[in-house]
Structures are given as structure tokens and as C-alpha cells.
Image (cartoon, rainbow, N blue to C red; front, side):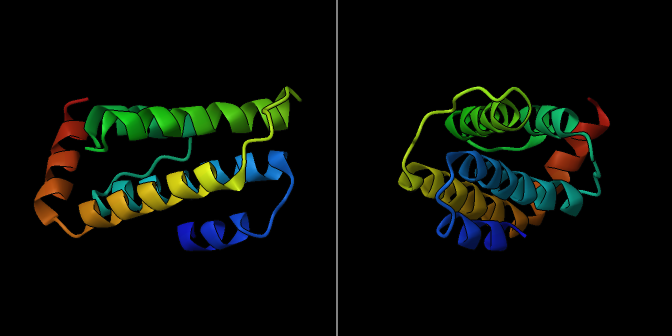
Length: 121
């Protein structure tokens, strides 16, 4: 799903939809990591809390994902102006999270550490 979102982001011009797609690209990548650790969360704030507690993304990446979440909420539910950020930074974030997630998924030891960290959350 993250790959599809990444492809969609290059075609969409609306800042509202770009914000939404950016967040979901990150969310799908994060969800893949959590599912690999046998963790299922359908509540976005809980998923983000699990990320903060257990997923070894760099702090900058975690802040960017939280920012993408807030932008999506502001655009979809509060009709706040989210600015007209160019597609470039959004694409970069999606690619970064996707690559970091793939690296985590390739390492069974990291997946086991995530599972253990969540067990004691």
C-alpha cells in the first residue's frame, strides 16, 4: 500500500490530498513493521504511540510522521490551511519512511525487539 500511495502522490496536485496521501504512505509503512512484530493497531494515535515506544526510526523521522498526521487531521477535519508545500519534501518523507521500514523488516532481530518493547509498554 505504501508503494501505491507513493505513486499517487506524484499525480495529485491538491495540497489537501497530498497531505493525506503523505500521511497514509508513512502509516502503511509503519503498519507493515508492526504487523511483522505481530502487533495490530487500527487506532492511528495508538499506532503512533507504538512507533514512539518501540520502532527504531530516527527521531527526525518520527517527528515528521507526527507532523504528517497533524497536517492530515487539519486538512480533513478542521479545514485549516496546511500551506502549499511542494511535492518534493512529501515524496522525500514517504521514500525515507518506506526505506527505513524495509530495512527494519529485513532484520528479524529488530522485529523481535519491537515485539518485546510492545509487550512491556
